[in-house]
Image 1 (cartoon, rainbow, N blue to C red):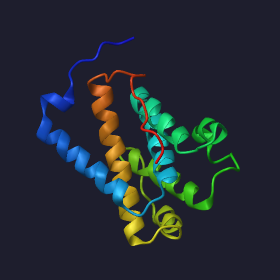
Image 2 (tube, rainbow, N blue to C red; image 1 turned 90 degrees about the horizontal axis):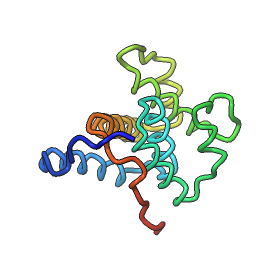
Image 3 (cartoon, rainbow, N blue to C red; image 1 turned 30 degrees about the vertical axis):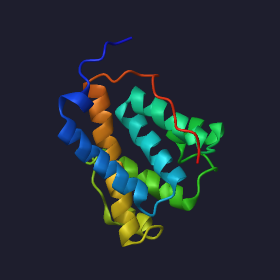
Length: 154
C-alpha cells in the first residue's frame, strides 16, 4: 500500500476545475456511456492506473457492463464480445495513448472514422485525452485506490 502524496483537487482547485470541465464535456457529448467506460478502462490498463481501473470498473458494473467484457478487455482483439464500433474505439484509444512510441496511420484513422463521424472522432479523442490526464494525476499523486464509490445508476 502506498501513501497518497498530495490532494491535487485542493492543491490546485482552478486547474482541477478545468479537468472537471473537460470531463463534463466528454459526458455531455454523443458517445455512449458504456463505450466511454470501456475506453477509460483500456487506457487505464495501458497506463497502469489502479485508481482509475477501480473507479471505472465500478462505474461500468453499476451501468450494467458484464464481468466477462471487463475481464476480457485487455485481450479485446481476440474476444468476440465487442462490437465493431467498440473495437474501433479501443484501437484508437490504444494508438492515441501510445502516440509517443507509435504512429496514428491513415488506415487506423479510416477504420475508426467508418464507425464515428467527425464529431464522434473528436469526442472520442477528447475522452482519451481526459482519461490519460486523470491517470497521470492519480498515479503521480498516488490517489487512494479502493476508496471510490460509484453513484447509483440513474
